[in-house]
Length: 478
Image (cartoon, rainbow, N blue to C red; front, side):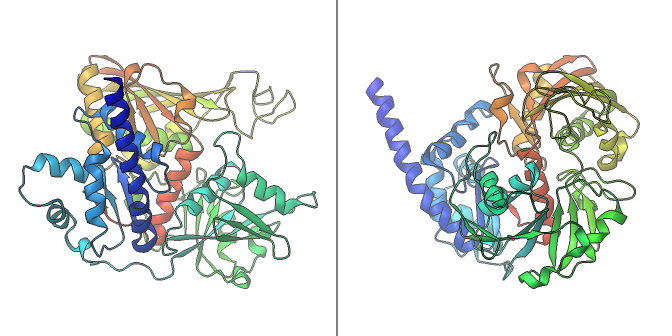
């Protein structure tokens, strides 16, 4: 029996290994992103591909293996595909349950329609992107953009803008921070530095490092950058007047802020109100990490049950805004050591939900506790609903939301009693429902939603970036 399981593992390992060049060819040559129930398998190892299939057993009764998805990949590689995102897990499941006598290739052609014959043209050169600021979010955005560079017809990272540091080897220090990360691990690939031209090369992507002290002092066209979207990661300017400084630079067309915007700026939570983005919008905000984590779950719950009122408590990892050891800080309590204390503080996330989901305006209160962990946070949603439910019913609804709804990129679902915060480092979803912690009492419920407040949020920013850049490809199955 033991030998049987080991042999089965070796066979599946070999099949996963054969999938890697097929996945890479689709991505590099055709700008086709492949996933398994929403989990990307681009640039993944054999073990990671197998784990992405194993996950399905946790949330779906009928499992899925590489034996099911490999034929789908092989058939896709024979087609003249248009740029799109294809969930090979859902295609495989659909084919197995369809009862159809047609071949896998014919089934796929039917599901893809005109996408199977190159019916939609891709961008010829892609969209230039500039990262203004290179802190936690800036470096993760760089990793995401580099990893998903594809064939160069999508989002192309052209430059980062930073203040000149005091160290003579500033460029190498920037490259080192991109290469090594204490939370997210080593960069997947190779990095080299061109000192003479202030360029960092990461997996072949040439990133121009521009030193500047203000947003309006740069001529990006000098570096061959045209009509770029500037992603402001600094949070220094959060209103239209301040962020408009970027638009005064040659070579800039739009600005995306990775912080809550003030005034009349649109605060976008992708998956919830991204349809509010107009082509003529020049400046928009991606809201906060917490707002992105809770708003999709709140939308799903409100649409199904109605949210009458509620309180959001955020248990949030400490950030650079806090002091490492006790020292003066203008904010209340934040002057105390972040690494040694739980710190009660305020959060605007509950009120900010209404900017993306106006129907919840005035219905939520919120507060936060900063805790001594470097990443991954937890939102506790205590909600009064418009109708009654049960734990099983509510969890089943949220599980299906994570797998099949328009919010599947934002809402994840886990049903293990053993998970802790570090298990969600690198999770690409905005928020992860911990189903084993769900409490329901008639028309009241308490939901626990984990979120990687760095990487999950950066993925949300990237989704907005793709939309405003016109490289948001259709998803199959819809």
